[in-house]
Amino acid sequence: CCYVGGQQFRILTVGVKSNYVKPAVGLVILCRSKAVNNVKKFKVVDAEVFSVSDVLEKLVSKGMFTQVAVATKDLLKAS
Figure 1 (cartoon, one colour):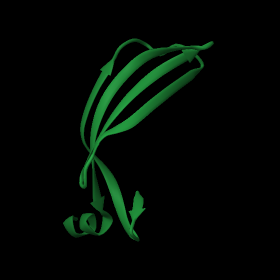
Figure 2 (cartoon, helix red, strand yellow):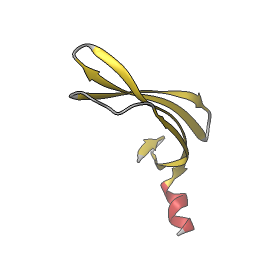
Figure 3 (cartoon, helix red, strand yellow):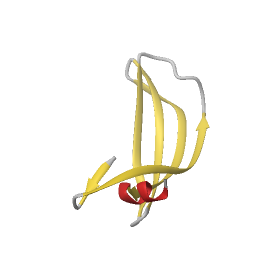
């Protein structure tokens, strides 16, 4: 959950598109993500996952995620 202006929100996943490129090999798995579209209600996030061995990073997965922030009080009303 997160707080904005004193109000508590839950982040819900609306959609997921994930592509697996190759198996992850190495001691470190690294994910880099960024907001592609950061509008008022929906957030679209792009993410890439890399396996790291020695100093080489190899892409193992790429995904796009759509999320929505819902006020906790609104979730409680719906249940």
